[in-house]
Length: 242
Image (cartoon, rainbow, N blue to C red):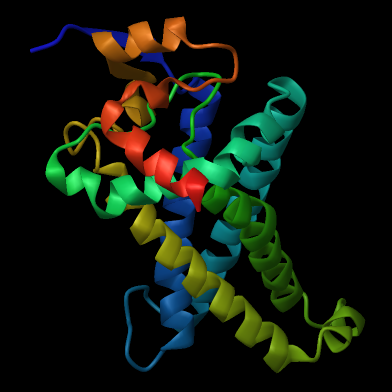
């Protein structure tokens, strides 16, 4: 078995934000489901309690999202680098990662990407997180705020098409967020072990196999350590030719 080094991948503020956000979204899902289907679901004591819990959880998630944005945009100054796919990601990285998730993983091949502090997310993660954090979360928060303040914000609600339109949009956005949550949890188990990518969100540290550490140190700046895996060269070459 190869020797493993550890890389400090998730600072404390990121871990706190992650779990606050995770539990907040789960609470929103449970309370929102009871609000949507009050005759079928009775998880919380009453319909009124479900609304109150939903509103409080929504505000917590909205504040958490604001703090996340401030931390990466202002404190770490790495929001664009971590969450926005670059040209290489779009041309080749997304295809290579998709091939791994759909095919190579089941053959026991190593992942074509290993997270480092300056490059945490593979191209597919970047694309998904960009859609979720810059489109889905702001929209679901905005529609939620409108539904919480129907009377004082009735002019804006009418501009958006009325209360039914806002309610339907909020529900569809919430369903998309729940679908992402299930996909996120599943993909988080596709590491060397099922908990390999989950442990850093508790401890901050992720195991890094020796050969990946060496590859990361020998690559050029911006040249990710994913390309030293020979089994992906053919896939990359075929995609370039296309």
